Length: 364
Image (cartoon, rainbow, N blue to C red; front, side, top):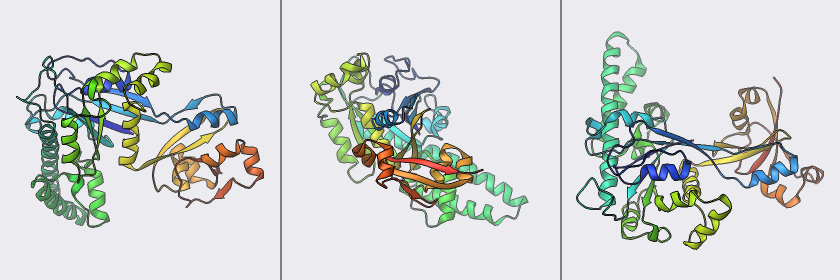
């Protein structure tokens, strides 16, 4: 899973990025500190793997991962090349979702690109730039299809051309691509292939001060109220606190979070929100060599899940031996679970559930 981090300059994007990835991106109090995109990969914490590794004497544990991409701060007119422009937006077109960091803290020592603090305005500014960037991309694509149509009489080109015109009319009303409802499978396919920035699920991070880390403030509440009718989730995080806690030994971090009224880290909350937003689940595998978590979209069939591990598994799929993690945890032994008939044999069309522990049988 890839998450692209966006926001205006000096909202705390790189501080948050460093805190959650420990990547050491440069941080400074002036716009465009981030010239090249910063990329960091973090493991998705999954306590279930510990038990699986113990039951199977696994030599190692491999968690699922998330790749974070931090690009330069966007400004009004970015889609037309203002600031450092479109070169950064292209870096997140392949991201699965966008994390939009909004400044919700007051600090006279950290300059703001506008005259006053207004996270809702800032949110709308960046969202508009994403829409305008999509419009520019679609206009280029429209021009290409028109030129190709003159030399190739292809019905699919006409269908694409007509849909692009329809989608452009929608975006030009200021609507984000994710608000467009495709009317058929053809439109779904086109939307998927366009990689529109405004079509991606969005997670909004309200970056608050240390004192507001637990309860938020009037600025974070303004974002929550503004997005009440939207599917975007607002996650209240103090990037500065997260950065400071990350410098502590791992064994001391949870105590510090609890002291300030938090049950889990900002990273954990961001991960949960991203899985929910993208409707992802994890299934688990375990052998002596490795206990591992695999991330898949909800609704994947057993054969598709097998293909995530290796294409040979999907091609030669025979069966999946499945036991829910909660059942295995209760029994405490895979051998005993088999004796009790709790390990099910499922076919290729079985819909995988979150936490399924699976052993795939295949033949190629």
